[in-house]
Length: 96
Image (tube, rainbow, N blue to C red; front, top):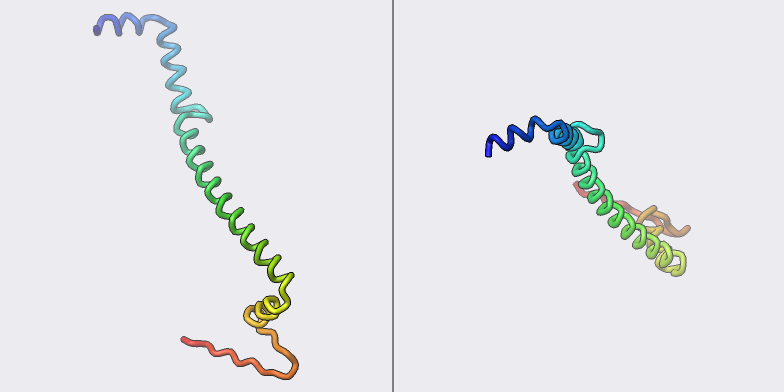
């Protein structure tokens, strides 16, 4: 067994193929290690993309509802931007 391995190491094609494979696996810019890292990053980015697309869809729907409902728009403006009517006062209570 050992003699067959040693005799195959004397073959220049086996040595060059082994060196080429080692180079591709560890040292090249497109090595297997780098490819696995990049595929992990790609998975994470796809998850983020799905999350943001869902958030955009929810925000579009909320915006559409706000623009179509006058009472909801008034409620949003009062709560979010502390807007008021002419004859009323707003008191903001801040709790520690």
